[in-house]
Image 1: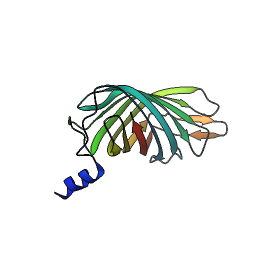
Image 2: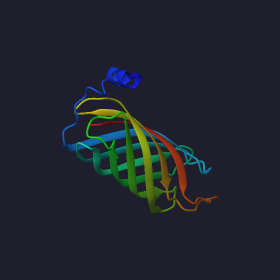
Image 3: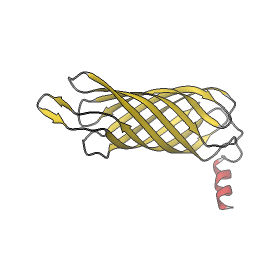
Image 4: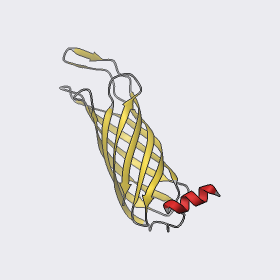
Length: 169
């Protein structure tokens, strides 16, 4: 009973389902490197695709992940699927992203690797045409070992915990 009262207070239970059609959105967040390679990031992502009653979005997206402690940049290009498995608006949802990441490593060449990001999100506010949310996710960037001038980076994939704040229209 308390849950329904909280949902009604934030307006989630009274919302009508979003209409099917074109949707787009953007996320801003950060990732903490859990693999110990000092590659924590600030992330900016944008995506677009199709929205249906049981799917918040199915589409493609791209982003820029800027490493805070060095000049490495990663550019993920991915497919995104976001769903709450319900036709009516829901508080929680599943966010799945997978594709390629192009790692621009200092003065080295760009290398493409596997990119995966499964996550769980919570809707903050929204209506029939927009929704704001927070996503907590795991990010795998398949970065491989490289040498940048004097230093050798012995990396066998980056594993990150990521938090994203976003909006979808």
